[in-house]
Length: 196
Image 1: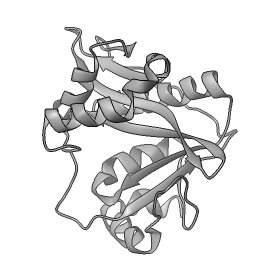
Image 2: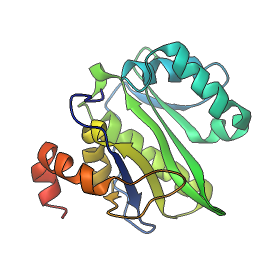
Image 3: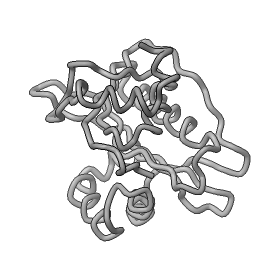
């Protein structure tokens, strides 16, 4: 879940090409699957459940407007985690953004439903997404845009080889490092002390 009790600031992270990838297994009973037609509803439900959108309808409309025109790419790049009953409970997308003419690999819309958080599913999902991006596009820098509200995910990204960028950005995203860092330092203090 997003922690909207703290101020919102944009955070830019980058995983440099060549960074070793740690392998994480899903817990027993969980499995990966890729997007296929109809699973946009599952995506919308997961994203709305963690507070990324105010409703499933809003989430679904966003997905249709932003992604459905890239149907063939979605089948390769959008991943889900299924629980033991085969229900999608987590998702992540290995995508791209353009920075002027430069095509940057990026991670979009990482979410695990709250009742499944803290089980190692997120670590496995991020690692799978990174490996999938490398298989599709080669070992290149990978960016992501997140926010202070997602400090728990930022902790996971740090463990997955991403670093918080002090000034660099990509696409059209603003980098609010100066405002975000004190908040992240407070929320993640011991983890950040080891990295900065």
